[in-house]
Amino acid sequence: MRKVALFLLTAALSFPVFAQEKVDLDMLTRIRQEGFRHSQVMATASELDDRIGPRLTASPNMKRANEWTRDQLAQWGLANAHLEPWGHLRPRLAAGGGLGADALA
Image (cartoon, rainbow, N blue to C red; front, side, top):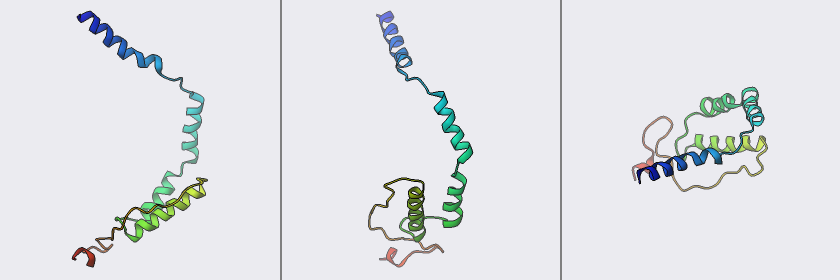
């Protein structure tokens, strides 16, 4: 019984090895080179972090960041870049700190 269980365990663990698809190393190299040569990660992070700044839920900065991201995705060629409504929350904290008037109600 123990040998049968060991055989079944070995067979189960080796099955995924045979089921793996072949990796296209040329395509993988092309994707990596595109990222290294044309990456816009730092420019995107700088825009969102340095220029727009912190984004509290429902804050003006969150709205600006969402709109900038939508516009940037459209500029990069995404056909259906759009904003969707997500609720009726009001900002609770102002940028300078302190509670908003609606938080006290």
